[in-house]
Picture 1: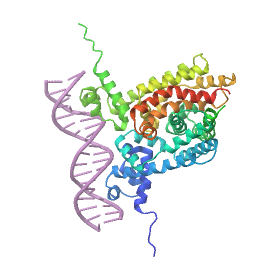
Picture 2 (picture 1 turned 90 degrees about the horizontal axis):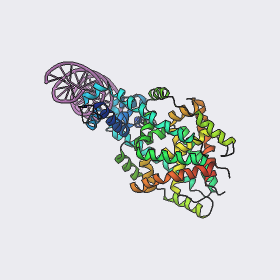
Picture 3 (picture 1 turned 120 degrees about the vertical axis):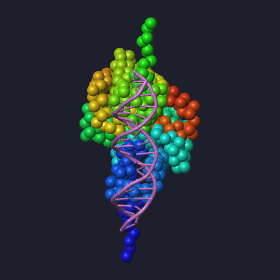
Picture 4 (picture 1 turned 135 degrees about the vertical axis):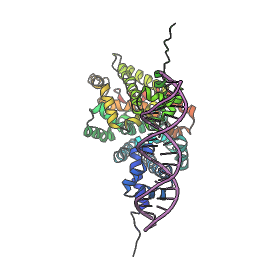
Amino acid sequence: MNDIKKDNTEDKILKAAKTIFIRKGMDGARMQEIADEAGINKALLHYYFRSKQKLFEAIFSNLLNQIFPNISSILLSTKPIEEKIELFVENYIEMLLQNPYLPAFVLKEINRDSDFFENTFKSNRIDLSQLLLMFENEMKAGNIRKMNPRDLIANLLAMCIFPFAAKPLLKLLLFNDDHENYNRFLEERKKTITEFALNSILPK
Amino acid sequence: MNDIKKDNTEDKILKAAKTIFIRKGMDGARMQEIADEAGINKALLHYYFRSKQKLFEAIFSNLLNQIFPNISSILLSTKPIEEKIELFVENYIEMLLQNPYLPAFVLKEINRDSDFFENTFKSNRIDLSQLLLMFENEMKAGNIRKMNPRDLIANLLAMCIFPFAAKPLLKLLLFNDDHENYNRFLEERKKTITEFALNSILPK
DNA sequence: GTCTATACGCAGATAGAC
DNA sequence: GTCTATCTGCGTATAGAC
């Protein structure tokens, strides 16, 4: 008989660790918590991954790989610039709506242990030079106004990511802590960020 | 003789705690570290502030009070909207350049213990309703295009704060980890954010 | 591979001398 | 008020039975 188990222990651990680490961060997470979430005991965590640090590295490295490839692909297509930005924002916000803890987690961790972050990151070698080139070409062609393409990338990422990372604060400040209204606000930003950016960069 | 000491122990502790907590966060900071920074020993920390939690609350609550009053004042002046936004961005970026660890710290802490954050925050009662009203009036007067003023506030804060909070990431992605160039980029954003926003919201 | 029991170190907190 | 020494609990990690 075929005794391959899809849901084997290692996968259960990785899934549980991802959930807990994203929610609590490296410092805040407890090995006991991860074991509970996975339905096993602490000792098994150490049997599969020698230490908390190693387990964390597995999760974090994997996450960085997941997030970034998707950023570039849409923006590097051959569609008109308006469509590229619209699609990028929609897809990115949708991804964040499905992973709302991700922004705060990543920001926390990249600021915690900078050596570790840089090593992890450089080994995954993500390259935005093509993206910068694309924006520069759109400017030369007169499709968008001239500006530092780094500002454009920073602004787009900022407007997408920040309302998730600062959710507890903005929800309170802008919506009297109303959860429903804040989530609707985030959903609507698929459109409003696009409008805001295109209004700024399209030639008058 | 006048033996009033300006630099008394309590002040030294508060100053040291602020430095360490902002850099490391509540979870990452160590009482020993704070004691060392203040040039005293651990026991004194507990003598002045019963617990780490109480010391942290003193720092965090104080910080929230410092940050927010300055946000509104400029934007609620009677200057033309272009000037208000220009001045706000310049002042806010300047404040962040002088407190570069602040964004990552605040984002980390508001996502850590939401109950504590809400209590601290509500007792400081910051109110953005006047700000929302101001933007709505500018829209009615036709000085800026119609949009949800909450998006405008979120976008401005996002564009200012995010490049500081995501510094390790953006520095690597956009500037090959060149510290000098990244700081120049941040400095220049006093102008580029203003341009980006005004281009978007001013009537064509 | 999986478990229970335990070792070990660290960090917050306290006791008590001065 | 300030210090040294110490207690205590928690969390990572390991030993060892099954």
